[in-house]
Amino acid sequence: MALEVCVKAAVGAPDKFGDCPFSHRVVLTLEEKSVPYKMHLINLSDKPQWFLGISPNGTVPVLKIDDKWVSDSDIIVDVLEKKYPEPSLKTPTKFATVGSKIFSTFGSFVKSKDRNDGTEKALLDELEALEKHLKTHDGPFIAGERVSAVDLSLAPKLYHLEVALGHFKSWSVPGSLSHVHRYMKALFSLDSFEKTKPEEKYVISGWAPKVNP
Ligand SMILES: N[C@@H](CCC(=O)N[C@@H](CS)C(=O)NCC(=O)O)C(=O)O
Image (cartoon, rainbow, N blue to C red; front, side, top):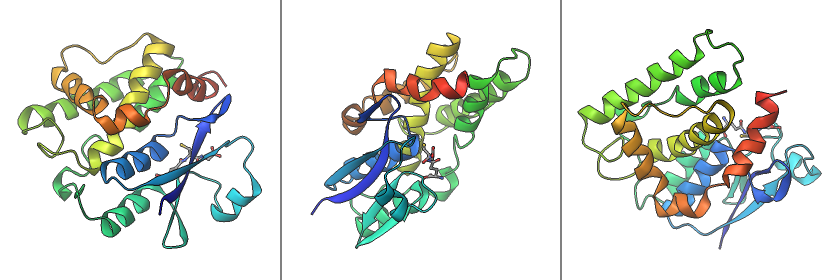
């Protein structure tokens, strides 16, 4: 039987999958584990009452498993790993936090209106740390040959970074970070990613109100 998962609907298109990297991460995990699922697209600017009943904080993603609704992508991914251990997507602990500050530094930079406020440098520092990891470890993924949880968390975030910074700032990851470029290509060409990625226009419509409030 298919699992039910509530995910963010696109801003301006409530019948399309939207720009939530946490929802996307859960969907990618389900795809990689070949677990059948049914998505409920939640319009976060007009949350239905039934959704507020199962997600008291009003956040997505929420997954129904063993008749219980579970919130928070970190918890959901752990629950899925335990319930569906094959294929294993466990990331060795020593690699679990690689790239973990990329999304927050990207968010500050994309919203910044001051070229000299250090937000670009903060993002570049995080991307350089990722470059260093990828350069000094076997790939193509963070933990080696096989995709694992840390990659499925980073893939949607790097996609947002590429699409939103390209659109709002005409900015792209410097060519000198060649391992990061290769990594992004490997992530974005996963069948699971190709199948589930939100359209670029919905990443842009999702970020637009945060970039220009
Ligand atoms: N830590 C949570 C974060 C989830 C989150 O921030 N979700 C956002 C959408 S991407 C949300 O539901 N926000 C509520 C709202 O916008 O009303 C997770 O990993 O699942």
